[in-house]
Length: 295
Image (tube, rainbow, N blue to C red; front, side, top):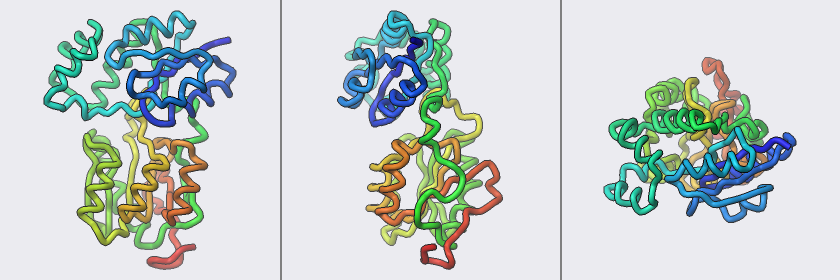
């Protein structure tokens, strides 16, 4: 039976990916990044071993020994760690292999953008015989789809904020500034950068204590989906609800709902409308009957 290696970071996406790989009739070889992978992840694998975060040579060796030619890098790996003052000392403490040291000083030392990091890693892994494939390959059922996903539809005000904010988000994502923004009454409250969506949500709550704002999240059309696909989960919904968010707009086919049924159920329970925006952003999401009302 063909096998796929899953290089697992934080969160539930590695487990969901493993379920998708198995459903496709393939064996799952789990490679859990030390100190990051969820303790429940190994149980979803046919074969599992722990690997060092900064030792990709070990990833390649373990995957090839298990008969894998394809691999998927999935799960949260905090990019902001590279900007810590002590990052170089932390990197040495992890005992990186020569592969990482070479990448860092030859290609990433002065360009730490996510796109550069991920493309460099994927290309070098491919050159070493381990093909890193689209991380959504086995998660199609969990991708955002066009249209309203929840019981509650966006209000007219929320739909207006989506129509106003979507072209701006498209531009910031193309510029690799961030994958999310928050909008209220046609005013941009916050923009995601390296801190991630959860921290942006917390910052938005401080800047907009009245609530009633809309979260917009997507990836650019040229985004490398071999890793770092924008994701929301149940935690995102809880944090957003506590911060006063009432509507979430997601790029259809470009954002993963980490366990889609649970995310939708959490949004329904919190009274948050979720709408997927397709490739025709000129078409606004269908709104409820009037401002502040539900369908």
